[in-house]
Every structure is written in structure tokens, then in C-alpha cells.
Image (tube, rainbow, N blue to C red; front, side, top):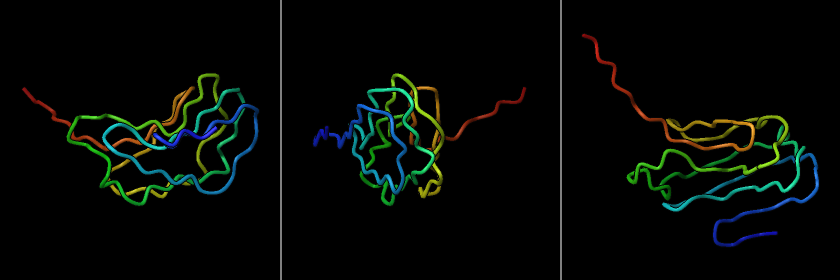
Length: 108
């Protein structure tokens, strides 16, 4: 299933994916793969984000979800071709594309 508004591509059965996953985004979100079943393998995919200028980081958005897997998934991206100062974070049910945020250390 493809949801044109957010570029969501859904898979209903487990499979091993390969190739490039190229995403774009805006203030409301970004393209996303949604897995309806457990066991989808993303270790053959390369995440590519060429242009982050459309991502609105002024609204304090902490992450953009690129994999939505409520029942889990397998592996990590083979590679990530992403701009400097951005990172990829993995948890059991999702993968996120995040702008790096600075932090302050206070010494007393």
C-alpha cells in the first residue's frame, strides 16, 4: 500500500529488502516504510537522505520515523548516506532519522 501524503509504503508479509531507501520530508514528517508483520529484514537497505532543507528543524521536531514496525523488524541499515549533523537511531519497533542537538554541561 502506498500513502501519497507521507510516502508510506506498507508490507504485509515478511521479506528481505535490498537497495536504497531514499527519503524526503517536511515539517509534518517524512517518507516511511510500515511493516504490518514481524520479521522484515532491513539489513540489505541503504538509507539515503540527500537534502534535509525540507525538514523543518525550527519546530523542535526531535526525530522523523523512517521505519514503523509495531511487531518488530530484523537488522540495521547496511549503510546510511546522510548529511552531517544527522543520525540514525534504532529501537525495537522503529527506526528514526534525527538532527543532532547540542547540549550544555554545567560545572559548579
